[in-house]
Structure formats: structure tokens, C-alpha cells
Length: 173
Image 1 (spheres, rainbow, N blue to C red):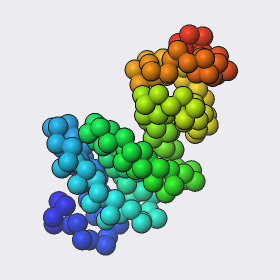
Image 2 (cartoon, helix red, strand yellow):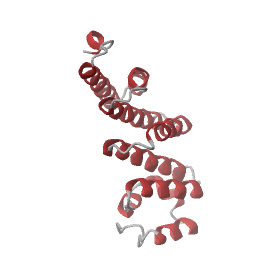
Image 3 (cartoon, helix red, strand yellow):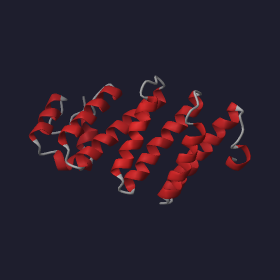
Image 4 (cartoon, rainbow, N blue to C red):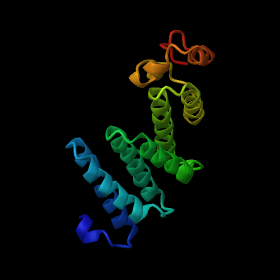
């Protein structure tokens, strides 16, 4: 499908090609082939990243999220955060619900990365941005993510959790 219709200018075919590329990348990631997955995500982003068509913007945004995940699995946190920053810069003003979900996921992952590196202030800033994009704060999600373990004892993190309405980090608000 990608080889046959990848150069098409027909919107319906472009949408199918973008979807096929996205699912190919996901499958490669599931097969523990992160380099190959990243290559296909890069091809998808390069091919359709400048499109204004919502049907193409969604797979591009998802490819950016999955590329970030693959980079994180390869222990490349700076590259991982760079792709999420690019996602936020590119789609941050979008009102499309699917893109808002991808943006919220990226913001949460950035906060996780900052927390796992012990940067309390950056993790809190990331969680605030995530809360603002999500429209609520999910205490359970933070409580159940091991990435926050390095900063859980920090007084400023504890104070932040109280501010967000989390009691022991386990209550959703």
C-alpha cells in the first residue's frame, strides 16, 4: 500500500497511506524494532507533516508521540523530549480532540522524564501543563507511575500533590 500509493496526491489515498505507515511503525515497535519504527515515523512525519488536512494531522501527531516513546525506550531522553516539544509547537493550538489527547500524553511523558531524572521543579511544571491541557488532574495516574518515585519524598512535590487535591497521591480530582 505504501509503495503503491505513497506518492498519491488524492486525499483519500494519502489518509490510507498515513494510516498504514502509522500502524507499520506501531507493529515494528511491538516487535522490539525501535530503530525501524522510528524510521517509518520519520517518513510519515516528512511525508505528511505539513498537511493542513485533519485526517493527516492526527497520524502525524500520533507518529510523533510513538517516536518519542521509542526514543525513551532507547534511553534517549533529550531526543524524546525534543520530539514532544516539536509536537507541542506544531499542534499546540489545535482544537481537534484527538490532537489534544496526544498533546496531553506528551506533556505527561515530559513530566515523567523530568521526574525520573530528579528535576522536581520541571516535573511539577510539566504536570501543571498536563493538567491544563487535560482540563483536570488525575492523581491516580501520577500515583501509579514509577517515574515519579525519585521525587515523591520531595517536600515541594508533596505540597504540589496536596494543592492538586491528592491525598497521598491516590485521589483523582
